[in-house]
Amino acid sequence: MSRDGRLRRRILPGLGLDEQRHVYYYALLPNLLLSLHPDYVMTHTVWPQGTGRSEVVCEFLFDPEEVARPGFDPSDAVDFWDLTNRQDWRACELAYQGTQSGGYTRGRLSPLEWMVHIFDNFVADRLTGKDRPTPLRRTSI
Image 1 (cartoon, helix red, strand yellow):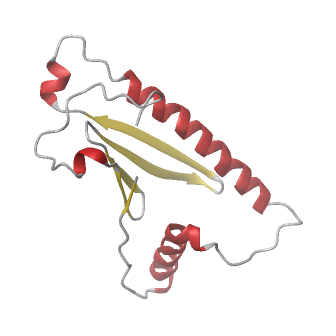
Image 2: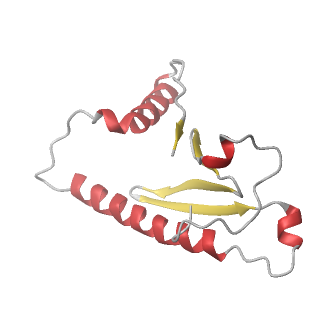
Image 3: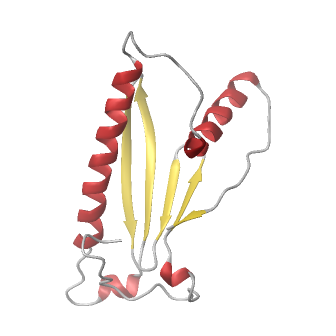
């Protein structure tokens, strides 16, 4: 995943052919998102700061041999995700702002929002003391 679609680093060791062609996303509730790329791993950790406010820490992990190479430059990945994150965060801010409007009516989630539904159940289960199994779902692009 880069702005021009080019891979700038060697593939991480040990990946099969299929794994070399996909990016895998995992959510480890309550606050860790993993993005497994063929040439690096990225984490997002979300830390609630209060009602309507969160801090997101994004970290990149590269193969140590790749980092040691002369001219190592992670900016393609960092720049891509900086742009993507800023766009996503703005969409979240606008959605939250919309839910605070007097015209907002709560309703059912779209089937496309399955991860939001799982997170809602996770929080509800912790608040009520229930422990339902969380279905696993693998998403790749």
